[in-house]
Length: 155
Length: 460
Image (cartoon, rainbow over the protein chains, first blue to last red):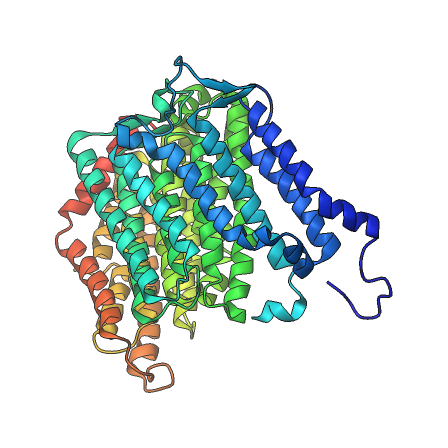
């Protein structure tokens, strides 16, 4: 990302500090979006995009290598994406094993649902978490490739 | 149940395989194994559908309209089976040698999931979702090989087809706007009452989207660069499996969802198809490069499908289905043969060439025969003449390249023979093309059943 002849190579320290701290709160916003998504606007996809935006800022502010050194979890993005997709597929297709059509959910409509505050614990929640992980994972993989230094792109 | 499993197997297998290094033999062969499993599942599903009629499933057990409707009818399973077969051949072709990229095996399996899904859905938006899954996998596949040529092909392919997908999405939105539903049969029912200008515009949007996929004449410009630039296995996959989306889409949406609009524009479609045939045929003559010739030939060959669709009626549609199937087999055989060297590859290529030209006893002859029948039923002399001209053109360009590639001693003919397994694979495809020509009854019955499902049982 650094081009020769540029005197000021890194962004402002303010940006770097904010970028470094932002992923935490963005996870909270994402969790809130998923939790309220069943009654109001919000779902795993939107939640994933919000966290990915925070991660994008980290990449912009710190550069690829430093970003991944600061948040080592970013290196595991491919596992996150594949794991998320498998989780979403599993929560969509598990009813087949019970002899029901795909995308049926447990507890079934009308049955008692365990609630923690506004959070309802039922299998579509797993689907949304899966989609969330998939979106975060895929967008981080893209950011990783875009943030690679130029020489490395040849590999 | 079977429908869901046929969808689940390639999906999960594809996701898992993408995570592993596809250059390892185990991963490549696991991909071949999961495609084989998918092919078996689709075959069982096809047997069920052909024996016991259309199967339907609504996700989540919701009433139709709330849940997504998956419906497997004869037309859908025929295309699903054909596409998975071609994908299997392409994947096995690469697995025998050595896969050159990490993601190739996983992507081919994911492509199988996308294609199977879109052939068995009865909902326009779900169709779009699977369509995008398949297209995203094929964008990545078209870059397979990683050389400058392939990257150029991938860029052209992706740019043009993204535009096509966008037009498709716009038409989906338009259809939803005027009918208030996304289920294919309901759209078809309510389209009758819609303002004819609006419905014709939406139908034209779908037509353009699928023509881009198929590479029909005015939308063909991307095709030669892509088919000639990508590796033979990928070209076989793109022209034998991915292009099926276009043919299936034209049949499903044209004859199933927009029968009124299809009837009104039939003549225009037939003319476009005729232009495609002549354009592809003329430009294919004199191409030095086999892949480039095959690419122009592909433009000409899909013209026949459009002509048959334009004529319409049970006879025309049956010919369109039959010719799509035959063309897809031909292209898979020819592209794979063009990437292989050694004993009986020349004969396999010749069988494919004869089939494209429509010479007995190959499958292409049966296809041409049905097209002639269409021409006679339509009572059109021009159509019959066009078919003869088209066949002569394909005979000329096919054997020009055949001579250059297999008779002349030169840099092309030289080169080490390919592994036996790779050659056997091409031979199996060639035998399949021959068998379909010698014993055409199953293929004819299948096409007739597919059209019956399309016309009698209604769309979706």
